Length: 136
Image 1 (cartoon, rainbow, N blue to C red):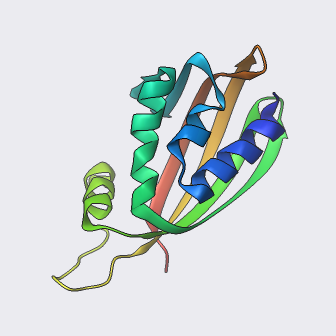
Image 2 (tube, rainbow, N blue to C red):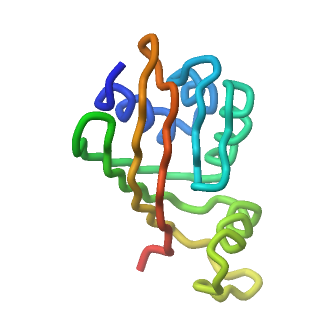
């Protein structure tokens, strides 16, 4: 596996909202750093983390390969649950979206970078850095 094949699989797993497809991209003891301070290791943790994408709808992922093991990715999705909105709102540390009860949930835009290393044809480690905001 190389970065192009990994990103194709990453896109497919995210758009399908499929934790098993995501985990299958990784070596059995593979690591995914979803922030600089959090890491999921092994397929069970990867699948558990990736379940949160099931709270997203109409996911669209694009990416560009920048070099060996490096990609820029861009994602939009419709927040499909209050639970996901609260996860996002807590992670931002700000009140970017003031919602009143009954207001529609936002469509989000994420933009990020991914750096990956590979072992035995699978991802050994992936690190992402990203920012998100409500789509205008």
